[in-house]
Length: 237
Image (cartoon, rainbow, N blue to C red):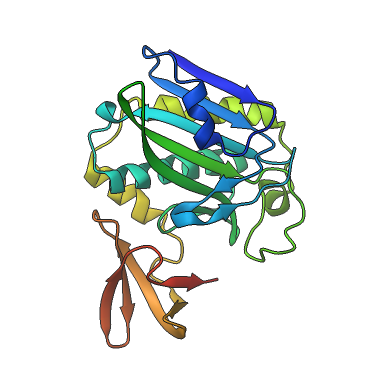
């Protein structure tokens, strides 16, 4: 049983899941809105979204059904979102480590993975924000939407229903950790390209080589290869 609940507005879809997780027989429960006022991103960042233009979606998945590590499950959610948007837009889509979705060099989607307990059951809560129809991003130069990057207009309700179906169908059978890692690295943004990174206020050139199963990214510099967790280094693009 898969349940999808619409909210006219809310502060955060991740926080609203507790009000609908009353169906222990459900394999997947999700809430969504087109008007989220206080969305959260990874590591305390905010996710700002224009009302009526974009999708805020949160999906609860029972932890007992996930047989891979937290890091790899995070990667897999990014792979699925990537695949959905790539199929939908027929455009070049990449994953910016660890789980932002890049469409034509602009971030159009962010993902927040949390663990929460509801009704004595532990869940992964996957919070996903997708910029669909927003046209202006005055304060965030590296942000865009499906509309700005492809000129394609989608009905938000139909987009959400198709997205939910795609996510739940593909989460019913999670691949092996090796396959997830291979698929993630294949779509990694700026992989094997010279890029500019910022660390401790200093900028230097480097090349992303791969992301590993422990959640670290390996970057090659002139003096050797180093590995980093999220927020330890910033890719400038």
